[in-house]
Image 1 (cartoon, helix red, strand yellow):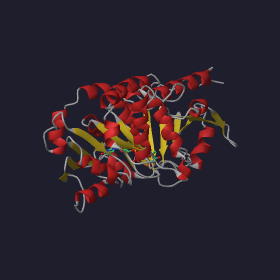
Image 2 (cartoon, protein in one colour):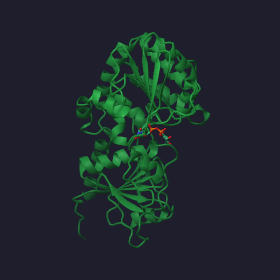
Image 3 (cartoon, helix red, strand yellow):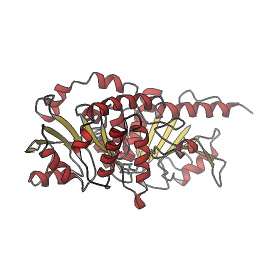
Image 4 (tube, rainbow, N blue to C red):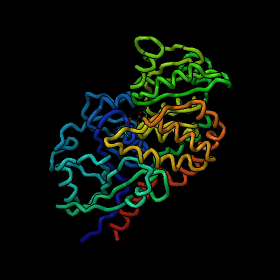
Length: 392
Ligand code: TRH
């Protein structure tokens, strides 16, 4: 019997089902690009909703069954029983199979995985949670009930012992080289605001707390400049400004508040919005992570779940992020985040009076988070270990 040699180039298939919004494809697309660009993997990304994908990458044509972008092969995954163009005989099975967020792999694909000479490394990439239990469950194996296959849970997280979160190698260098003035002229069409203004970016779901917050910004003692990417909260901003819509290119003022609506940009350009602002309102999973790498104070609108299952996750994130702050500032961040997520009324002045501490904490926290290692690198290391043991 011949011993299979290690693959010279790792082939990886990532399966992504878009539940809603942009987070599922946002995370998968970022991971796929990073595995291809930084680790030299041959990546295929199977996605069931190419329209959501097109918003993040304009090169993706929703009409095509198969295409390539940023060094990643993209397959429109439209038939649940099939994956890719092959049938069950010619189906190509990758060395590494990533099932994102518990989506169900096509049954023919799983059957073919079991028949492959060298069994693929099968990972279930879970949603990010900062809760303590995550470290215990990260990398736990789950044997398949029928096939000789083992699926391993890969848990992103904010603490040691988890899979970490995605971070590109060049991200910090790009942030440090960021041309703020140029960005303002190109993307907002005005000069960058003077230092006495506070620039707020607002990426959020519909939120009943927004009306009160907009009123506080209107009445603020110094200028507030609000940047609103077109999306689910735009309608509320339009109502506050008394205009029919707040779409890309629009702007309006009330009192101390000046608001600009921005178009939805491709994913690699999203970070610049965070770098251009003094405080970032973010949501879901991927923008929440990017706000942490931006090293600016931020407010998280967590993805709401039934039975308020998201609230312990919000508190778990706070326990990490706000941990290094003095008590008064920590309590104020917690109050503001809770209020933005439905518990209480946000008090902007109470939150923003801690600005210097929040700036410092944002930088310190990014260093702490980086010590967990970036998710793509952690995943590649795990796969290398498994492949090594398979060869023994
Ligand atoms: O869009 P989100 O709310 O995504 C999700 C989904 O709802 C998902 O089902 C849920 O499970 C998950 O959250 C927790 O938020 P998120 O994760 O921040 O994804 C938004 C993506 O959109 C992110 O990759 C940044 C990107 N983006 C751009 O590329 N350009 C833009 O202009 C903006 C505003 C965002």
